[in-house]
Image: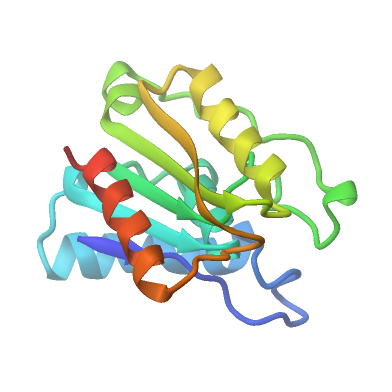
Length: 177
């Protein structure tokens, strides 16, 4: 089951459009996955995969840190990703709070079960944030974390939409071997 992560438009209740606010969109996505995907559709939690594009990548890469929801599977981040923040982050990176503490239940199953693929196009202004996210998960002991730079230039600068799909497909092969 593939869940594409995106955040609602900017508004008084959501802060930055891309930030996974704990009280708002994160709770909504958690309920949707538990009730609809795992509950009604009967998907297995070890077969949940998430993806995000740009800001959605930041959300997807840090989602499970902001909830008690755990899954195995993988996360493919295209043109984004970051270190999970205590409150989801701020509009200006210079105002971001510190990284969130690691969840207490990082068992071997979690560390070996969730795979991360960060894919960035050359010269993307979010490269540093994406690299920080990949380093964060590697340093916590996750077994499968990869950061790659793919052809293209600038933010999500794939030469064509098909190339972006190819990058996504390669990421899915990595997170679902």
